[in-house]
Structures are given as C-alpha cells and as structure tokens.
Image (cartoon, rainbow, N blue to C red; front, side):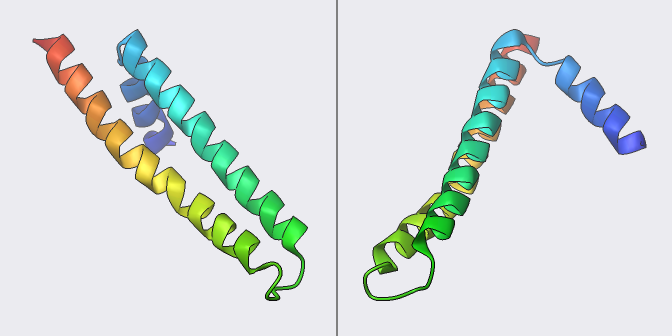
Length: 84
C-alpha cells in the first residue's frame, strides 16, 4: 500500500505535459503488447509460413521497452526544467 501511495504522490506532482506523455506512452505500450498477443494467436503453429508473424510479434514485444526508456528520460528532463 505504501508503494501505491508513493506512486500516486509522484504522478500527481507531474506537470500536465509530463503526465500526458506518460499516459499516452503507457497506452501505446499496452497497444503494442495487445498486437503481440493477437499476432501470436493468429499465427497458430510455428511453421515456415508463419515465421514472419513470429518475428513480427517478437519485434512488437520489444517495442514497449524501447519506447518507455526514452519517455522516462524525457519526463525527467521536463520535470527538472519545470522545477527551476
């Protein structure tokens, strides 16, 4: 519970721009993960014909990490500049 309170306190102290960027990047990351699951379900068994769907799902699975790391850095910079 303490972690949730601390997280809520930190997020509520964000500037509106930082909060918007965080919210939209989390939404986009969830969309990537949903597309990953859907492409794996559409793929069925792994064969030569469905290997491209597997590689597509693998790339989509790695995208949220590649998206969220720069977003966190940008949010930190925005918050730091707004506090000065």
